[in-house]
Each structure stands twice: as structure tokens, then as C-alpha cells.
Length: 143
Image (cartoon, rainbow, N blue to C red):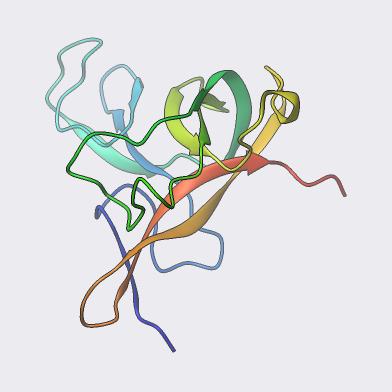
């Protein structure tokens, strides 16, 4: 079994059967932030609590990343293997909008307001075989 580690610690619960984003909530005014912050950008309070922010939301806006990001790369992709991907803001139930990579990568697959759910994806493999993972959002499956 391949060991998996978050590319950046503290962004989502890991390991977990149903990982969710982790952010902060101001103990004074209740404002949420992602990633978690030690102070509040709304009221400047200095007391916050790390909270689960869920794994579902609605697509607020989006674009297609059709060119390779500048170095340093966080994936193993090369200019030869690069595949365009969606990037968007997903509005969580708490009202906070988070920027995320999107699984869908064509304009006809993305609609503002569509229901989204978070998933964990591999992005890089270390020399020792550890697989680095991060989150992205995808169209929520209809049940």
C-alpha cells in the first residue's frame, strides 16, 4: 500500500474516510477563514478555533487553467504531460468561498451554482514512494 501524505498539512482532515476542509472560526464574531488563521480578518480578534468546514458547496465562479503554472510546480506534470484543469471558487455552507482546483476541465461541464463535493487527489510522488495528495472539488454525484 502506498503511503499518502497531504501536500500541505492543516488544509483538510487526514486521514479520514470523508475528508473535509479545515479552517478557523473567530471566537468573537464567528467569521470563518480558510486556511485556518490565528486572528480574525473581520473583527481583528486574536482568538480562533480550528473547525471542520465540510466537503460540499456550490460553484460560485470558475475558469479553465489552460497553461502550465510557473515553477515551482506542485505536481509531477511537465509541459509535455500538462492537461488543462478547472479552477473555481466554491461557496461552502458557512458562506465562505474557497479557491480550488476542479475535476471538470471544459466549459460545457461547469455551471455557476452547480453542487460540488470535495475529493482527494494525488499530485506528486516522492523519491521514497510517498504519494503527496491535495483536495479538489468535483460535480456532486446525483443519488
